[in-house]
Amino acid sequence: MESRQTLKEAVRFGIVGVVATATHYGIYYLLQPHINVNIAYTTGYALSFIANFYLTSYFTFGTKPSWRKLMGMGGAHSVNYLLHLALLNLFLFMGITKTWAPVPVFAIAIPINFLLVRFVFKHKKL
Image (tube, rainbow, N blue to C red; front, side, top):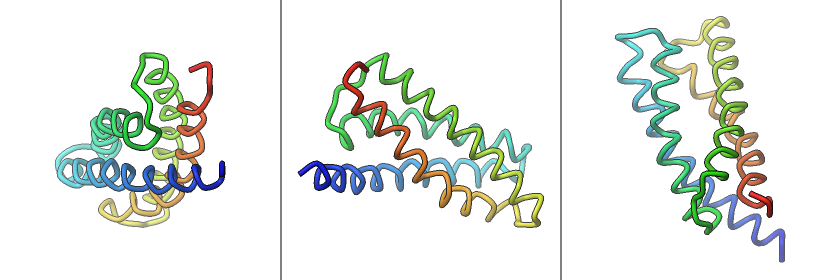
């Protein structure tokens, strides 16, 4: 039964992830022609994080948001953010255009983020 619950959470996480990723990429896409790509990427990440936290809490894991969960998710996302920026700059260095470089970043970082965030929301002491 635990694996069925995990699968349901993963599907809901995917839905929330699509919303958060679309928000993140949309903001990045609009800003990157005008400002440094790292700043554009960070701005998109930060704004999508806020919505992501509430959607993850209520929809994905069916829990109430708390300051502890926000701090835990913030910690998980700090690791994830650093991974995102490192990968973004790696793909830019490899010659992928500014417009498309986030796509492989999302493909690599999102599954890792699911594991980190799931721990935060499912850990009994948080």
